[in-house]
Image (cartoon, rainbow, N blue to C red):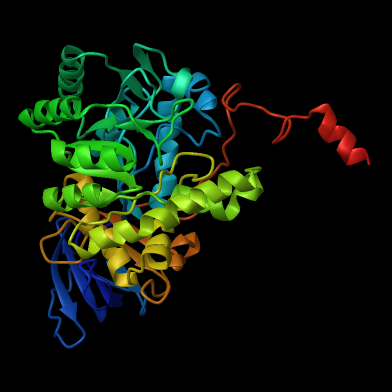
Length: 448
């Protein structure tokens, strides 16, 4: 079925348009990298013989998936220690260029990388756009802005300077200077770690570590330079203040209260719950040595937040699909469908609503709203052909063998296994002997 022509007809397929409409049988004409016409089964198709025809035999034609929360430079660490101290920037960039191939093979035609090691995200995006390597469309942030509290990495981050994906800022002048520096370097988004973890904290979710005035300063500075802002927010006050401050996208948005929900609805700010990570750890944590208490904690984050997120959705707030791919619990190319499944099972969305969240609605994360994410005349021809019906079961999008073809701008992308199988460079992974401390009491208990 593979085809590299930019002008062709995908015919005889089940079309899911990504806009929430009911599927229909039809064909899609692609010309000069865009969808020029969508035919229904009742339409007469009168095209020149020069147009190449591809019969997809009743398979599904739909927009490619967009992942609005993917860390392509991290290469699947198991800990913050591994991420911060066992990743060399140049080597991470080379490996990231390979890892984007996994996204393509999973049917991902676009993704947002909100923060990256060094400037890898910017460089990888530019290499893809220049045709140097194959990869999905990308939008990128630079280093996440953090206060000295340290985000979710605590004491592994310094009190000032940069480390890994983070830049610590400690004054209004530093905030403004860093936002301006990142815009100068070509970011698509500014990201702020609005919440983080700290010893002895007494709050639900995470601790808000930025003031409202600081958040407003970030948003105003970025917006003056034509750049949107996204924030990592786990906790009610952080969600409320980010929405009030003018943030353009909120990641997680868990543990909302009424005031936070009201602020989100008033601002109309989209939310990327990113439950795939929590769902994987809750459902499969025992496979990687996670304790039952950790599994229960992440399961509660979903259950405790689902009602408020559903209320936001019912009030017209877009919920976007993001997976946190890039960690050992969410490896690349494996779980990009997972958020759709969670939206259906936990939030009560229909399959069509979940697919819309992963396609046309998600185009905002690429800053290509109205340009991609839908099977509609005039849109970029970012299309996948799937063996099966995702409306009947969204989880089939997780079966790589069902992704029969991927097109970006009408150009067929590589599919099938990546060869040769890669290894890890020396020192890349943090070795360990097991998943618990081998203390004396434990050993004696096992001997009885």
